[in-house]
Length: 143
Image (cartoon, rainbow, N blue to C red; front, top):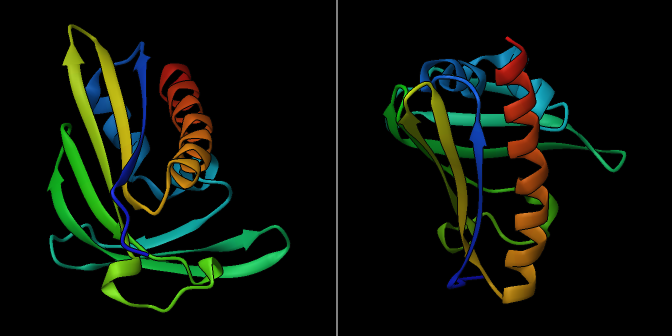
């Protein structure tokens, strides 16, 4: 798939970065904001991460690895979904970068996904991530 298009979604959350970070890394919160997925990882850099669930009536098991883990600041993981119909090969993985910027009790939260094959694919991903970051915001602001 090797693509050069980036999908990015940014939102300001009325909560400190530490609270947003807990939403991003707690399995119950992940299940809530990430479309009902169950996550399995120990958050060790270099370690695996697996997302399991049902999407459009089909069970899935997406996988990747943790590339960076900086509590309260930055999380970077690779991601591959067999539902894409592509081969499980390095060129078909995306990198998801979750960045938190503390702004005096508020947090600017950005999620980006690289390796989109076209502008249309990047726009589709952005739409999905826009929905996800709004859910992260809602969870963090009600805690």
